[in-house]
Image (tube, rainbow, N blue to C red; front, side, top):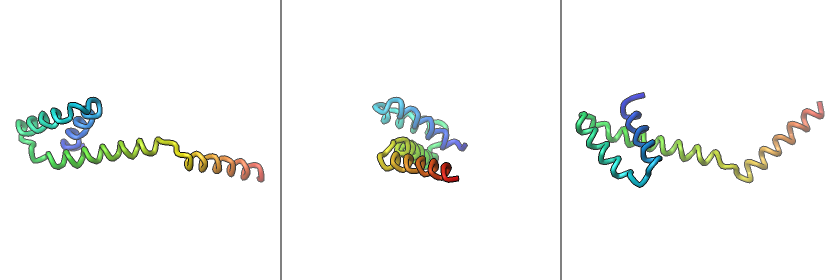
Length: 87
């Protein structure tokens, strides 16, 4: 895990806990990067942050049970029973 990924994870965790303070966290991150001489990492941190946000969004989307997925699950279950009984 490189340093930009670590910064992005830390920022994402902070923002997910308290989204109202997001601007404050960004200012503090920028100041910390400038102090440490890592300001060139800012675009990489942003892209890693976007990846984390997208992964979380997709995970939440897949957790939802839709009527179609429930129907498909039931049909597969019935099919497995039918196949098992025919043997």
